[in-house]
Image 1: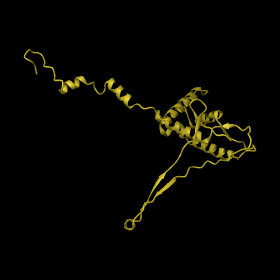
Image 2 (image 1 turned 135 degrees about the vertical axis):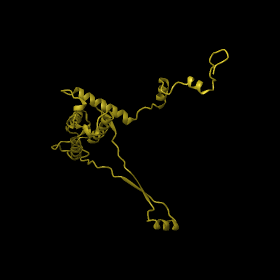
Image 3 (image 1 turned 180 degrees about the vertical axis):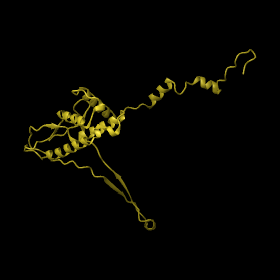
Image 4 (image 1 turned 60 degrees about the vertical axis):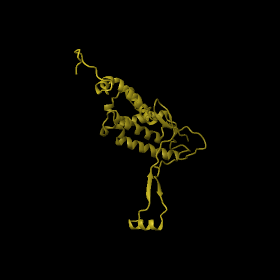
Amino acid sequence: MESTSGGAVPASASSPEARNMEAPPASSPVVAAQQAEGSSQPPSRYESQKRRDWNTFLQYLRNHKPPLTLARCSGAHVIEFLKYLDQFGKTKVHVTGCPHFGHPNPPSPCVCPLRQAWGSLDALIGRLRAAYEENGGRPESNPFGARAVRIYLREVREGQAKARGIPYEKKKRKRTTMVSAVSGSGAAAASGSGGNGAGDDTSAGAGVASVSTAPPSVTTTSTTG
């Protein structure tokens, strides 16, 4: 529409055309920055630790002689990394000839070496396995999920259990049976429908012991004895 003077008539402030001109497009950098600022939240403790562990492992590969690339990393290299971390361990693991071998609470100190606790290594491998796939790795080629790594962790668990006299047992699932009071008529109805008057609320409790850092960014369990 044109005015009598020949110029274009300005759109009304309330018209859709005016609103479209005033508002920035949804894909503009301003809107994107505002949305990112509103949705940004600090990472969880697990995510932060996972990122630190991942960076530490990458640094280990760079310092490896000869240097290793992630694409060439195998389960054997992961086991080398876990053994490398033993020098920073704080868990006393008694050798076979030690008089405290198999005693959970030895009465006196000994010269047995300190190692990484099995629980700490197991949790570390879990974080690195997830980080590998989050950074573009394929699940079928994940070196942290290799059979050799699982066997090594099992050997560490069994060896430390014997040396320290502290068996590692999986936590049993806590089964809570919810029982409700049923009246005579309710009991009859339950009997007629098959007798299923209670349900099980099963939850598994699993956690890692309190940890302390040893090498840069790697979490270890501090256990003495």
